[in-house]
Image (cartoon, rainbow, N blue to C red; front, top):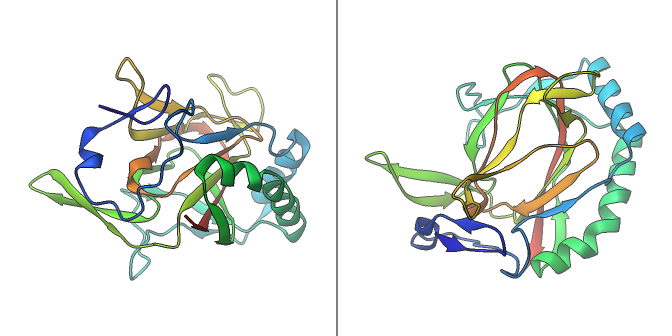
Length: 232
């Protein structure tokens, strides 16, 4: 294992294959990702969730490919649009933490995609993937990665609802954890993040940060995903 932060180790093979943008923060950070709690307040998160539930203009999420195909064996999610009011609130909050992101990853953010409001209900999931590359497999083994979205350097993922062991409100869900497939702790366990309402996690879009959204077994999981280009 290759130590990439104070508490996190990565699979060795990642450093033996070519990765177009192998972005990582300082290895002296506690984690290779940035977590900001209370990015949005509870009332705003609930307001966005309520609006999404009432929104009839929803589309099935597709895979990043030439024909933008839908493959429910890999991804089963739906996409809503943020209202203008909610997007303005989100943008203002992101601008406040922009200097923190830039300092953490030693870069300057430039352009960003439109934020996507992603809905996960019972049975929804997203298998392991990276945000800027496709994985290359031969004879059942990973031999490399092909970059298909070079403009994606940084991923931001805002959690609007909370993962819970028991559902007590309409703003919670079971399952739906976020795990980083190639990251392990000192005991060799895969690094898994439990979503909490109003928290945003920021990480590299490259294959080192390959991640998975585990199947939601109950409730309503809603996130805002966005991808950012940067000068490194």
